[in-house]
Image 1 (tube, one colour):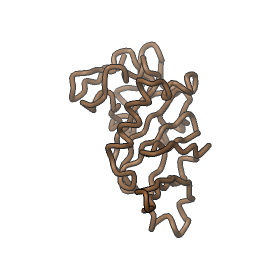
Image 2: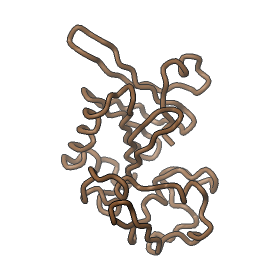
Image 3: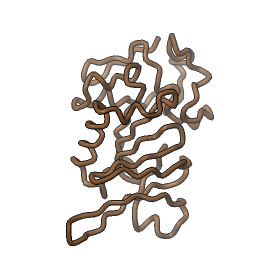
Image 4: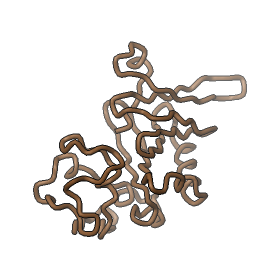
Length: 188
């Protein structure tokens, strides 16, 4: 069983949901599929020699003070990642495809929507991912982008209108010449 303490003193315990929901390129593990090295009741079978992607991964439940106990992945059926990278910053909620609508339950949706309202959408994206389907949560609406490949970019646009900012999101290929100018994030 893997037990990784966090900055908050929380631990993974018997939770292994990240081993299902997160993409791990080095072992050809797709999002939403159990890793071949995971024993869902006992943890990682190669924990001492796990891939770099796994050694550097830190669940948002373990790391973020503003994430309540209801976000414990084994209970919520969701794994949070808060990351900043070369393509931007995002908070991603990976949802177990056996409970695809759990993120819409009021307790979770309220938190997700509050995060979307707390950060400027042109700097931080709030993404909800169920297998390959991606939702961008914006202050004024949610955008269902459908299936998005890990190699595509998600762009958040802000337009100034007479009534205030208007937000939207779209998917672009990495080699689209407009992508560099607009910025974007990979769904991972």
